[in-house]
Image 1: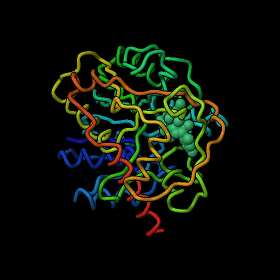
Image 2: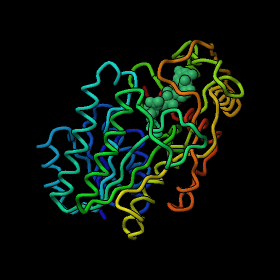
Image 3: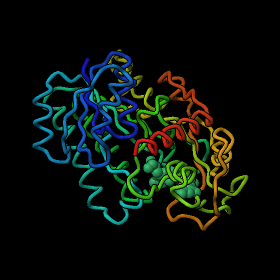
Image 4: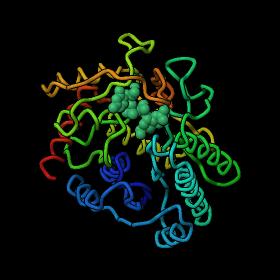
Length: 339
Ligand code: UD1
């Protein structure tokens, strides 16, 4: 059964391709390589023994998207990751984010309708909840005004998917990810941040590798036990597996409605200092850090209510924080040896 994975050479996409292939799915990757590398395709083959089909496509261009679907008429389902995702950049270049993220979605859904492809899994984010009023946050929580154009594209895309599913044969599962980190245990795939990393883990591993002088911890005056921000960090391999389960749910006609939403997190929140301590303990490396002022747009704390995903989707995160820290460091070390 053929699955189209857009953004399949990216961080979460590449791990999902591995899990799909290991379950016997045939995968077509569509990616414009704007934030990833073609070598990822060979590395996926090294892990799974199978080379996924790769198509270089800019999905924000309708004609390119049309050609992709014309070439692959036998697609069963689409997992749509392809999107720009740097929060800070989106504030400075909102139109880039609206054009890329929203046009891609529209083009893909249009072609799915055109070719009678009914199954769609969307890469959403807990960013749609903003700072929730109640923690852990469940799928029924009200959505808050987005703090960045990036976050807003996720909200807008979710709305578009609801409308299209209601008006067509398309079924959708929207997965709201919490904070995906770590890397495949082979250290053959992982996250390639471009330039200075914005996210905590790549900055931390680059500090450990001596590329950055110190990690800035953005605020220790939050209303949390140690004052630093709390997030629900999830191992990218656990997250990838949730996509395979979502596709299998569609194959087995288990969806309860035309669009379903699941939180994909561990249900446990860790502070920035917890992360630093876990990294130091597992990898036996001391991290230089400084407490600096809060980062604009950051929320204080969020972690997932995972009961619905656990019970209804039949998925549960299995990897520990230590697994995440170990694999993130293995990946960083391997990158440094190779480059
Ligand atoms: C952000 C986005 C999220 C997106 C994710 C991945 C928002 C509100 N969140 O998550 O939607 O999916 O990026 O791109 O838009 N921190 C430091 N020092 C650093 C970096 C981070 O202390 O150098 C802290 C942050 O203040 C935060 C935590 O570490 O408390 C996690 O930050 P980060 O990894 O950037 O992810 P989010 O901002 O949670």
